[in-house]
Image 1: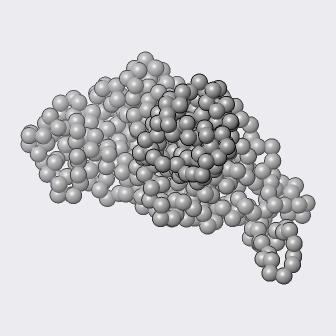
Image 2 (image 1 turned 45 degrees about the horizontal axis):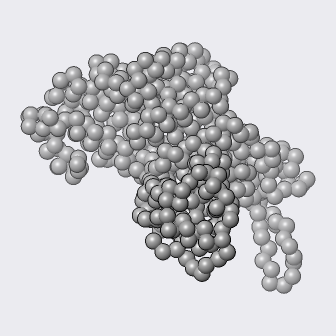
Image 3 (image 1 turned 180 degrees about the horizontal axis):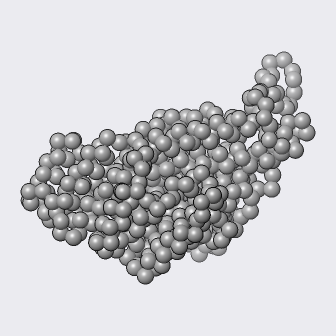
Length: 491
């Protein structure tokens, strides 16, 4: 792979860091190539490439950011391309950084929204990288809420932090001159009405996601964030209102990640989750940050990274502490259980499930529960038990819990019901009840094809793989024929 010329003076910054990291030239090249593969890039660098970089030649494209990430992982501190004496660029890796302050966080997430609403389809093809979870979760755990988040306001513009209740207004921002031809920049004054609107939009898109799948209105959500949320973040607000604003945008950003995850855009989803975590830190809502980490843990389970899933859930538990509502504690322990179940760690899984059950039992009517945690009820806990017992191949228990979840779960959670019905079908298949399993999976398949959810289809495909030994049975043939009639590829 050819890098850019002309030659420059030797890159002493890069040489120093190579020495500190203990890399050979070949070792650094190999790690850059491996990281490139994680992002769908075929780089093919070698020790000669690194020698050219040391002589002052600049790597092309996204490579400077990838090299910086290799050193970040090795040395345990965040390094940029500039720290390595390399030119900055707009890297494929962008989005996994944990910003040093609120303004940088706004720059990162707004850039992600703009790219996602554009025609850059490759953004949705970026691979998930387990190693990219380490730095953000660590920085969140040891970090503190930003000291100041107020923006663009003086004493008369919400600087006291008091919530503003007036209607939306535009006020002139301070500019560096007022000569002829200089445009006047306007800045949105954020109000409590704006925050309420953000929360209402979140409720709307959550309902659409639960019922029709993440692909149904994902792009509309991202466009809303770009065109409505970004002007607010760059607008005028005081401290108290700013915390609320960052919290509301963190929630919408997590939802953008969740819908991306649901359509199989896992690298993009990972970036949204990381940025949601950073926005949650700016909001000073530690408990919501824990929920974002649980979301990241869910994705890790789905992608088969059980160890990372357990670690994320434990970081969430440690960061939130014991003061969170009992329902939230139940949610955190259930997420850990799912990771242990995937790893086949029966004892640890059972212990985490027991903690989740005790926490949910401790919840009392009238407890103050964050709106985003209200979905975690007896039906959801039974669903968690069903998934865990399926992964542990304890099929009778899995079937019992899945059936209970389906009895308790409301129709508004249509996609979750597809997941749970497929888990029940898998459990029945594991018990040798092939005919019943195919009936249940057939019902789930029909519902999955009516949604825009890659995950729902993947659940059905997982069942089909397990059904393969019974393909020639009457029930098995009927299932695969039905899939063909629906136009669903199970390969």
